[in-house]
Length: 290
Length: 152
Image (cartoon, rainbow over all chains, first blue to last red; front, side, top):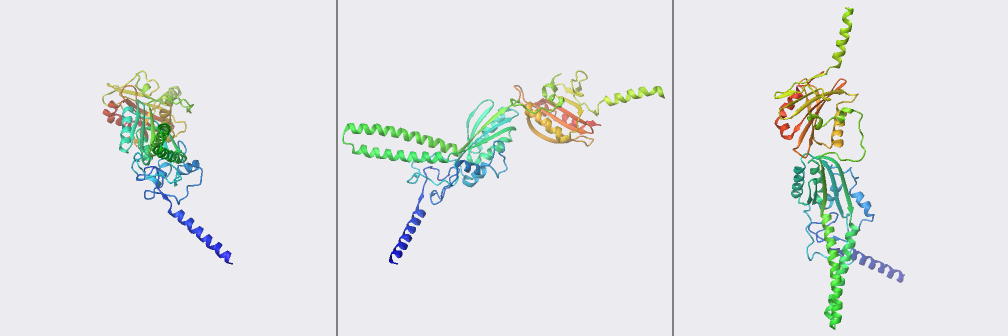
């Protein structure tokens, strides 16, 4: 009986410890976008709540759930597609700023609770337009108005980037610039990539800190030189990782839209020709030829 | 009376072969009498804005069918940009559908307005085209040409 009482007390103590461990673990992410969380990140007062378990499903399934769309099926009804995902996480978030130095650090184990997937949106539109130059200028202006920017522009195509939260809005408005012929929207789930990179950066920083400590304690020149070489190597590695993280954050925060313009039909795929000769005789060249 | 029958028969054939519409040439335009190509009526102004009308057998298709067929043909096969669709009506009260296309050639941009009507077994296609500048300047002429069509 005495033994049973002790066992019961031990269980209670364990449970209390587990509860305190669960509730008290609140971490800031290393994303540096606490004020403007990247899409898919559930910011909770600037901190990531580790008590919420990450969705236990395959990333591809999460993408499918978050953005149920096919290439050409992406409509602009405001209820489907990426906008829904954006509304859930960063509906009114301004364009995410580049990661600030000294940003909040990640949790000790380098993992962050991702409430919803981190997604990169890309769209390719093909349009038959009237006055290509005016359309290109219109697209560039639209990107700036939405808080985005021009990536590149040529005579018949333009690449712009817009804040992820404005992705659907941008597609809608671009569609109004001409005669939309094809639209392809791609969503890439980079949650795992993001988390993996986060862990690697954290670990590399730890290694760097250890080398710096060793350097301070180095007994002779030869030892110092060896440690400095390693420091240089690890620093370069860290810079590369941080560079990749910066690019990834940028891709998550800003969606890429490529607009291809064409003045005349250039499709190579076989097309249905209705058996009415007069339809094929329509067009300006014939009308205007005297 | 019997002697007149062949003449009446010939006359009826001629009537059947004629156009089922009457087009009014807008002021400032000249009807092109020759080289109609496949047009039943064509007129131009001095600057080169051309309007034309042709009639075809509607093959059972209604206005929506032909509007869609024309849209597909010009968008997908010929690369025209669809700028808009407008409901129109002749002075007779016959409703039609106007498809407005744009074409961005190497030179100046052009507009091409194609208006469809379906009456009885016939479909009527009114075309107007020219540079954007001309089409804008003579928009009223194009409209009056469409509204003035008398379809039988």
